[in-house]
Image 1 (cartoon, rainbow, N blue to C red):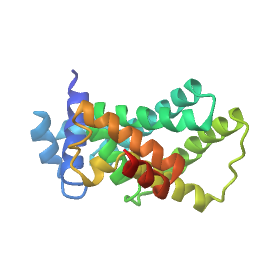
Image 2: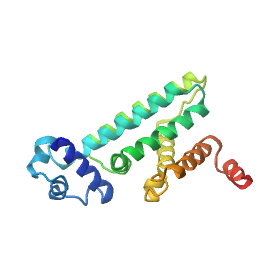
Image 3: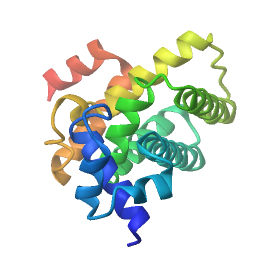
Image 4: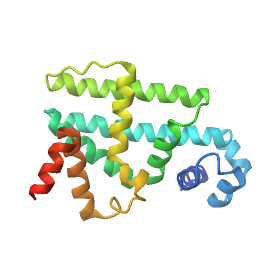
Length: 199
């Protein structure tokens, strides 16, 4: 691993554990076993490091959606595949995902706002491709699209956001988790509750 990757991973780990504002340059340097000037050299500072982590999150998330679209012919299949792809990426790149979800929508710098807008546009283009492919139409206002994305994403990675990742750290529990989240997205809470009660 290069020192640049060490620093990126150290920043992601600390930002995920504490938050961007609670972590200093020295904390990152110590975690990466690097000189603090290397953070400026590679990333232009702590903000640049956060932007790099957010870009990695966006890249991983969009790749997962693209693959889900390619693997799917119906909306139902797409939801199943999308949930599994996002969960797999969240498990493999846990800190990147936690930082992406936590910081992309809470930081107000011009760079982060621009990234967020580009992410939402790209993500919605993938979604529209899926709905076109499956013969549907999914026109929504910008606000509705943002709410749908945040709600869907939060639901898919809710165990990381509010459950310390205890379910998603277990292979067997992850299968049940993915199935229930997919069912919630496809059928809504009342239908899923009825299904669970019947089991």
